[in-house]
Length: 164
Image (tube, rainbow, N blue to C red; front, side):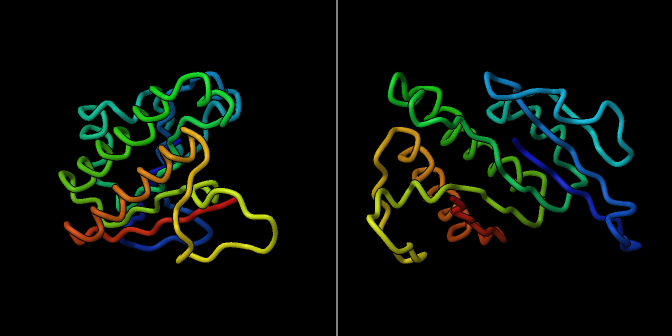
């Protein structure tokens, strides 16, 4: 899922005045009923993160992107990796290109701790080497590295989170 937030110049108290646009393809895991029919400050768009023209249409005027869009479920990736690579890697590339084209100022790229592979005990640090164990986690690791490259080469204000 892609969440885009617009902050108004006059500030906002408790999110009053903020606007969130949700872009969701509503695949096997998506459910439109999870979002209220009508909520002030919320716009739902059914669409694909890989649709560059749609992204160029949606992003202008937004100040930040929180990028959750992903094919997930490790077991499904073992059956066929193609959709995982397409959505998780190509979708990230198209989103980041659209962010640059529309001058969105900030991106939070949401990833997974599965990019680190398996660990018997303890926890990982950000310096831990990437060692994905499935097509899903490999596609997320590739997506992370692509996002990092946009930070490095384009100076994009970007953070990567790797949640469990």
